Image 1 (cartoon, rainbow, N blue to C red):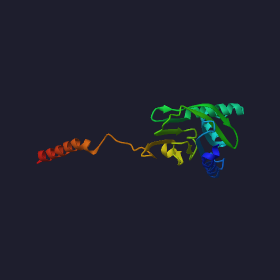
Image 2 (image 1 turned 60 degrees about the vertical axis):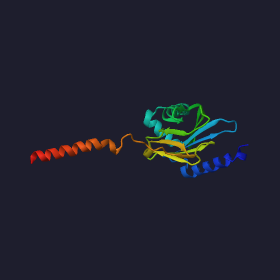
Image 3 (image 1 turned 180 degrees about the vertical axis):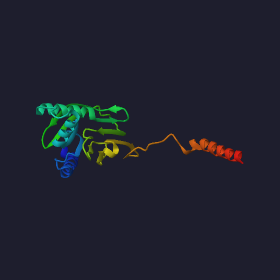
Image 4 (image 1 turned 30 degrees about the vertical axis):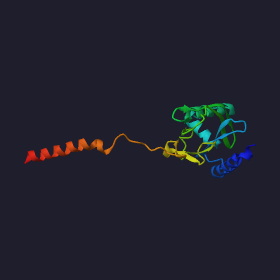
Length: 204
């Protein structure tokens, strides 16, 4: 059973923490939880306030874009498909199926993830679903074996992206290596110095 593996406790306290912080009515806050069900399905749940979804849909599609709850749900799923992505190990883009929207003060997108590889050494996740909302931020939590145990926050400062790699059994943010080194500019510096000396001598 799930409770015997300890995953139930982790999920319970994670959800409890999220509930206390988000208050389910804050349009600036959302959470992304990726977990495994008892029957082995990998499931993603994205939670935010109904207000956040309404504001983003109105911004993207304009006022009056939907006339019924069903039309609202369809537009939310279209937005999710176009603004949410997960890529593992450089080029393994995950896909979603059986996606559903559950309406309420806290509105949820629940979808099954397919294409999860056996081993994971890099995670790139991007969620711009609420990028147009002021101070929008999403907390990302993985409840899967082999994935990071800590939570991550994606927001405007990091372009609503999570990009981490596994190094020495630790998940870290990769450093950007520049091909340009100070030595590359040495010839230009020497040329400037020589040119300056020649100009100075010619005037004398």
